[in-house]
Each structure stands twice: as structure tokens, then as C-alpha cells.
Length: 396
Image 1 (spheres, helix red, strand yellow):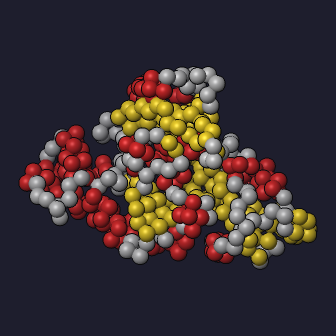
Image 2: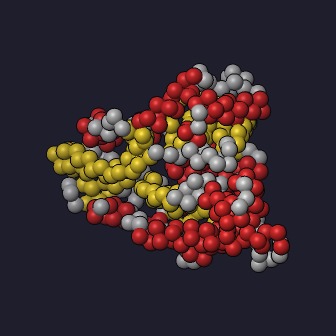
Image 3: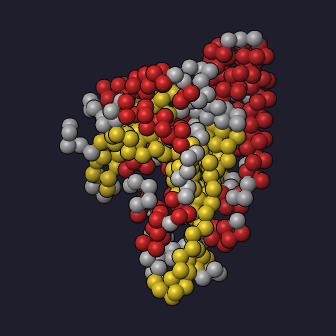
């Protein structure tokens, strides 16, 4: 057992804590793959919207329960973990200029960003950078290229998309796993990990929007040319549906949440249900509001023309038949599908569950990325193709 290459991921969410354990396998003609060998889920209280706001001992117990279940199923004891988070993140764009004086551009020239003051100044008392994506290149302030490596230039301008996270939030996470005597390999944004799980190669390269309906919010992640180029947050999630039912019908939140889950799978066009009919209009009103805001947000986004080819719905609330229909109708000119996990082997019950995509994406990140700032993380050797994204970002 000790000789196996083991990867473990812990997804901290407002609805549950998920621990996944996978082993790396070498398959003839397929290369290396990940095989799921253990999963542990610890459900959080219905009224929980921010898990790390719970008492420290309480959230630690929830995490331990998930880990214990996964370790038992996998028959291994984990020591290293990748952790996914969905709170306290911000996004910004930075231009980094390199003077070459008609010299050949090398990979190290792009890596110099991580040694520059532009990057080190991102570490402040309030926040730290979590992810850095090189999303466009310009040669000599005029020519936009996809892959500048090997080209001669007087200067190279690289636009970086930076995702940062609250420093206080990070300290809580590090303290939590240090107390558990677990080595935290890296913290990853769930916005990013979800896109890694659900997008196929064509969608990732040609542009896609991942709509992740979480418990306390909905996240729109924009991917183009295999890079996460931006995201928007809508402060409506499944908890708002349950709250609406609870308040209008004077029900306990736990009961309202149970009703919400039943309506998720209720297709009024195909059958009648007198019990659920009493709550259907309440649910529908909130679903229509969410679909409208999603559509408006995408239309107003600077990335709309790049990413609206494909719409992938995923997350805790993605199983809702009503939400699926409403969003599909809002994007009738786009390809639409329900997101499921790709590139990992395991039970289809888990892999096809859109609620688990951010967790499985974390495993994909673990096997395909090194620590932030290393060559493999920045994806320098991009395909040598011209792309409209590079002209697009000249105007940002």
C-alpha cells in the first residue's frame, strides 16, 4: 500500500465537506490515470452558509469525519492533502512587460513574473495570490501571439489573471490542517477546480461558461484557450430557495430544504403532485430570478463573445429540472449540458453527480499541477494558434 502514488483532496463547501482519495495508475495506451478508491462526505447544518465561520472545533470535527470515512474505504492513511475553497476570493489583471532587445523569448522570461515586484506586491496584510493565469501575449506592443516561446522581440507584454484570497481566511485553513497533522500541499479555488472537472478539451480551448449553483451563491467561471480568464458571483444559491419556502409557508428550514430537494426532481410538465404544488410557485419565482440574473450577467460580461459557445451547468443545485430548463432557454444559441466529472475513473454514481465536480476537479489539479509558479502550473507551451483572445485583451 505504501508504494502506491496516492492523492487526496478535501473540498470545503457550505453544504458539505468532501474527502476524496485516489491512486495513480499507469494504463497501456492511456498513460497515467486517477482511480477513485475512497470517498467521505460530512454534511454541514442546513443553515450553514460559511463553514469556516463555525466554531473551530466544530468544523474540525466535520472535516475529520469526511477524512475518516474516505480513509476507511480506501484502506490508507493520508498525510498530504489538496484543499478546495469557495469563499473570500477576488480577481484582478496585471500586465507584465519584459524587455528583450531583439532576443529570443524563453520560458524563463515568462517565469520572471514570479520574481517581479508586481507579483511579490500581491502579498499584503490582507490577501495573497492563489492562482496566476497567463492569458494573453503581445510582441513589441502590437503583435498578439498564442505562444511567444522561440520568437525574437524587443519586448513581451503578458497579461496575467490573478485570483487572490483573504489572508485571515488562509490562516484559519492552515491552522486547521496543521492541528490535524496533515501537510497542506496547496489551496485551490473551487471556481478553477470545477472547470477542470467538467470541461472537455474543445470547450476549454474554444470558450465555455461553467455555471456552478452552490448552496449560498452561483459562480460563473469563464474559460478560454485552456485558461480561467475570469468569473462572476451571483449571491443566490439553493439556501435561498429553502429560505423562501420556509418564510412563506412558516416551516422549519430543515423541512423547507427537504421540500426544495423534492422539487428539484419534480417535472410539472409531466406529472402532478398536490403536495409539492403548494410550494412550486415559490420555488419557480426564485429559479426564474436566478436564471434572469445569470443571463444578464453573461450578456454584460466583457468575456461574453469569447465564452458563450458552451454552457455547462453544475454544482449542488444543478440537478434541478426547473433550473436546467430555464437556463437552457436563456442560452438557446449556445450548446448546453449538465456537467459531470471527466478524466477520473470510479463509480458513475459519483462521477455523474454535478454536486461533486469541484471535488473531483481538485484531484485533477493535484495530478496535473506543481506548486504555484512552477513551469507546469503556468502552462507555457500553449498550442501555436492565433486566437481572438489576444486581440480582445489588448483593450482591457
